[in-house]
Image 1 (cartoon, rainbow, N blue to C red):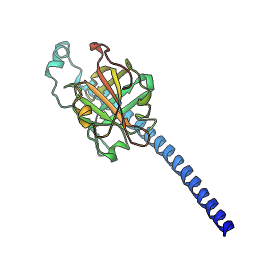
Image 2 (image 1 turned 60 degrees about the vertical axis):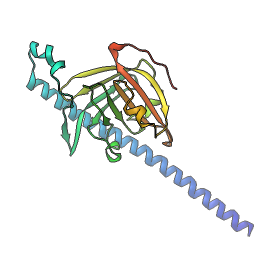
Image 3 (image 1 turned 90 degrees about the vertical axis):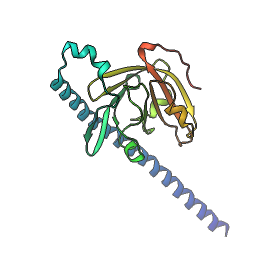
Length: 212
């Protein structure tokens, strides 16, 4: 009987190890696939922005009044059945990613998503998976880090990270109604909490602290 129990325990242990390895490699593959797809989408978005810039070619007068006349809603482009509003860049993390117009779990597997707001009303919230090629590195972002969001009109918005916090999933109001111009967030490993980077436009300066 003890011999049979030992064989059973060994078998169970082997199965658990194999399962863990399969899960590890699956996660790595999913991470790689998400990063590769984001790169391809980004090329399409940048090309679309460049085409728009060439077609629009605003005059000097139009450039002076552009900020006053911009509609609050962000312009969109559709790629493979999904709408995109631009792309987000975090040079310090070597990240440049497309941003989808709407949020759901299926979309998050493809690219970061706008959950709320607009860069034109200074209340933009962008969520992403914690893939290494998406927002997985958000856990190491520092106060003062530059963040850029470029919309489909080619307008680049420059922000700096003011505060980095770890919040519970139910702290929705703290994310959506933070009072900051831009909020980026993702799940921590395991999904128990959220890492949130609160940002303001660069011209406002830096006033925050590191992780809370």
